[in-house]
Length: 93
Image (cartoon, rainbow, N blue to C red; front, side, top):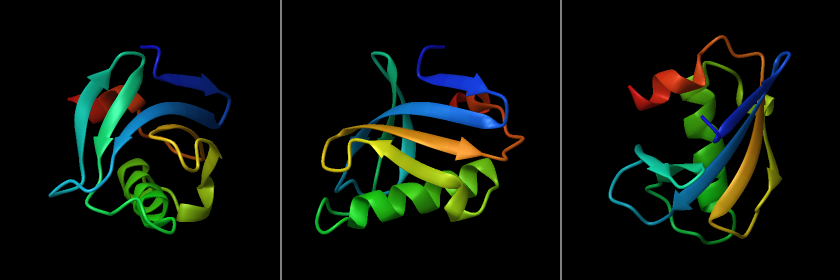
């Protein structure tokens, strides 16, 4: 799977985000990225905040362990998650 990379305790995710959806959910793969629909508008960082909260919940880590590295204003984002024992592949199951 090319949408994530594990390096020690750090997990790097490549995501394609669809803001303004009816509900927040994982939609599957979108090329080399994991597509996530967000029930938040792309206004004033609301979608980014919702994305961080959603991924922290999915990976069982505090929000401070989810860092947006690239793509603050883009649909394509790269995030780093530390300290999770959840396997990324389980998100697609």
